[in-house]
Length: 289
Figure 1 (tube, rainbow, N blue to C red):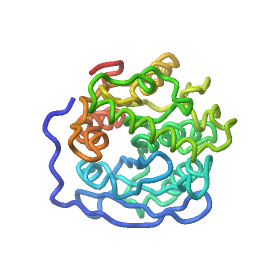
Figure 2 (figure 1 turned 30 degrees about the vertical axis):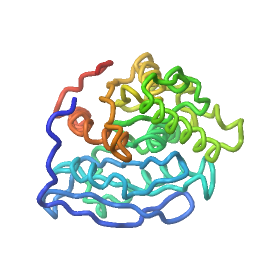
Figure 3 (figure 1 turned 90 degrees about the vertical axis):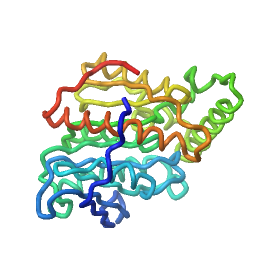
Figure 4 (figure 1 turned 180 degrees about the vertical axis):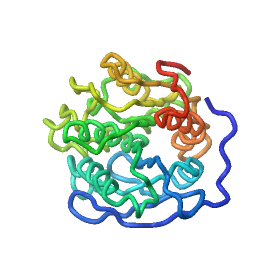
């Protein structure tokens, strides 16, 4: 994993548009590269992080700009934050955006052939959950899911979430991440009964069959790594083609280092996964570092 980070395409176009959410219009950004009139066969819908209470579509600009190409277009939609309306508003938005995308392929320069959902942290929760929703509601059909440092356990019960690293710097980062997750879940799931709902806590779901292939990325020093890897193991047991990887620790001196590390170190991995679900490259399922 890692290697040279792909360069920004010379013909990159970023276009701010509106998409339809569950209860109204949402801001979104479209990322295009390659011949202007051509339709790309793969659409990647990416949900931003922010612990359900923060974040914006601006966060993934550099990452998604480097991910797109002649056969891949990316869409980063906003979704209702918990500060406005709690669960299930965000996941209903996520599913509504996928339905909108299928009906508006021309606006997205997309052929409609392949649809991949992706996200980081809270956005990865939405990507995992919308995969369940698409299965349960009869569509749209997904060809892959990319979960980067996903928030999957509102109970915050895993060992990696509860342990305190020996290094003071890492301990401070772990405490910050755990605190952000706890605060985010308090805002997103104010009703305690919702914390075991599979659309809020996919890790607790007992129905994980018939889901799209998954790429799940954690990090060596990330408090979220155990839930990411436990979810990957559950998917594998249910027969889902799943690749689980641990990223190197992010540079602590950089603000937002966790997300930057995930995106940059994972770019080639994610691109290879997308080529795999496209049928142009054979994926390598299983666990690894």
